[in-house]
Amino acid sequence: MNREPEVLVVGAGPAGLSAARELARLGIDNILVVDRETEAGGIPRFCPHPTFGLADFYRPMSGPAYAARLRSMVDPAMISNATTVTALGPGLETTLSSERGEIVLRPKSLLLATGIRETPRAARLVSGDRPRNILTTGALQRVLSEGKGLPFRRPLIVGTELVSFSALLSLREAGVRAVAMIEPGERIVARRPADLFARAVLGTPIRYRSHVIRINATPHDAGRMASVTIDDASGRSEDVACDAVIFTGCFTPEASLLGRRPDLRDAGTRGPAVDQFWRLAEPGFYAAGNVLRPVETAAWSAREGALAGQAIADDHSGGAPLGERRVPIRTDGLVAFSTPSCLTVPGPALGPLRLAVRVKAAARGRFTLSADGMIVWRSVTMKIMPERRIVLDPKFPDLEKVGELRMGFEAQP
Ligand SMILES: Cc1cc2nc3c(=O)[nH]c(=O)nc-3n(C[C@H](O)[C@H](O)[C@H](O)COP(=O)(O)OP(=O)(O)OC[C@H]3O[C@@H](n4cnc5c(N)ncnc54)[C@H](O)[C@@H]3O)c2cc1C
Picture (spheres, rainbow, N blue to C red):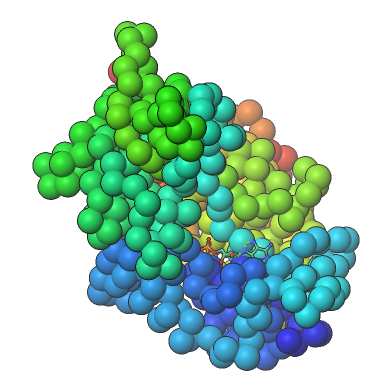
């Protein structure tokens, strides 16, 4: 392992690997990428369906093929697998742990690219028995990637995000049909016609306005699942027979390394608060990819990683506009968060990915940008949906004179 890296990249998923490739291309030769897994590639390593690659390599690829393609672009000597970052201290002091022991590094720059984690049953406070076969999508795909076969035949999927359909497809590849998908809202969170595909092609109905309230084991074997109890909007409850439950989505950034540093976190995502150059409020500290927010596509995360790599290389060559002050972008009402969540001045207001926002509920209307309480920009009227990337290109006032920006939404009937 390179013990004195100029740039340390934590996480070898699409964002981390793309950053490393870009840093090397731009002449930084002292790069170390660490990942706690035994192989680099991140989440795509475990997604067998061909829903990767189109946006960046212009052809559909399975997750493992996509991960292998990203790996092939980085010198393997730069990567240290099975190495976990366990602590980040002041001045980028980084503690790494592996079977070789523990070491502390002090890189000149550090890129956090640690991705996201799903919310398991315990954190969702679902009551009832504790039988086997209660998984997240990540756990399901990991079991499948080990080629061991599934110990159940009639799973129920909780959620209708994109990742929920990823679980459905992975089950199909294993010859297993889900008995139902459970959605609290009135429509699926992923784009239509995924709902039609689930019902008509895969034979899995979607139960809308429904919640899982209890998990039930069989009376004679506490380890075997019999059913889940769901309730619907009318308050009626029903037992749905199944032998596994897959809790999908409800992602949060894997940002535990930030510890109790509110100055480094975004209030909306609880992930790192970055400016338009992917920088946190500590010199040399950057973040990119899904750790910034739940959850983007692999291609978007890879693009962010590459751009963060360019920003780091620029900073190292003294070329980047460093800026002196961070102007926060607060969000109001329906707007959940924006990436970046602050802008450093002086310097260009936005990078190539502009301002990507997410909203909390479906609505129709216009985004508004206020500077110190005055509305300075309105978007065109648009229909918005939660869990979708909405890219905005606002016109900013002279940011050197602004203390705070606010992104809001004016709903229209
Ligand atoms: C189940 C599922 C299905 C998906 N399907 C698709 C799809 O079909 N198409 C698509 O485009 N996108 C899909 N996505 C999204 C896509 O996988 C992500 O956008 C992409 O992987 C994000 O890349 P990343 O590098 O930010 O994070 P990740 O891929 O999550 O990589 C983060 C890496 O950081 C490592 N790490 C975390 N903490 C530490 C630590 N402390 N020390 C060392 N290493 C650490 C992890 O081991 C991991 O390898 C899916 C996501 C999920 C969860």
